[in-house]
Length: 113
Length: 112
Image (cartoon, rainbow over all chains, first blue to last red; front, side):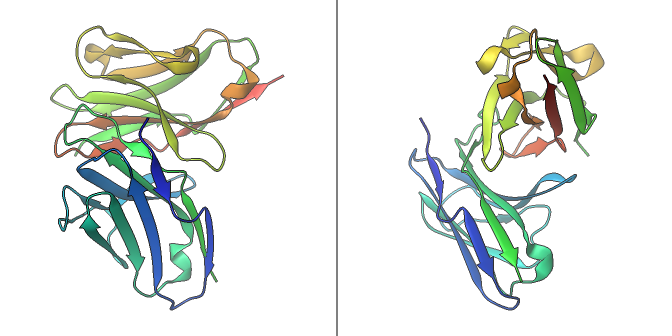
């Protein structure tokens, strides 16, 4: 089975801090994704990556950046955390085919105080 | 723009009753379709998917969904609800670029 591991289940940070969320997958998937999930809004795509060192903006990239130096690892960075970035963050990976599902980690619940 | 609509943000059914969660998509081309389930404090887990072939798709935990092109629908059903089915369910579609568009989710409540 595909395993997508997010480094933290719960994280509390302060406004203005630089925050790193880490995601690792063990199935050699080319594609990796970062979403945020908020009540009533579903999942919104922040960034995705098709390959190492490649990244593309999703629907809500403002205030975020990403890094993919190795195929198995995809990091989400909050450059200067703000309270409106308090949310559940989900990482996913998939094969590079439209008919393939995405596999999700358990999520990181991030609170910005 | 492509979109996915899930009718009802909350659905309640009695234990043992039929579960029906509705999903409609907008598309001029046939999509690939998925249903995911999310239990509290967990990520999303794939329930089932439709890519090509048979339009009635069976998934895990007794769920199934039927792709109806004429109605642009992909409703999720289960004949008999169990307490363990209480969760949030997401319908999703994929068209190109390997991205998936998710619906806003339906929270399923099971009444004893």
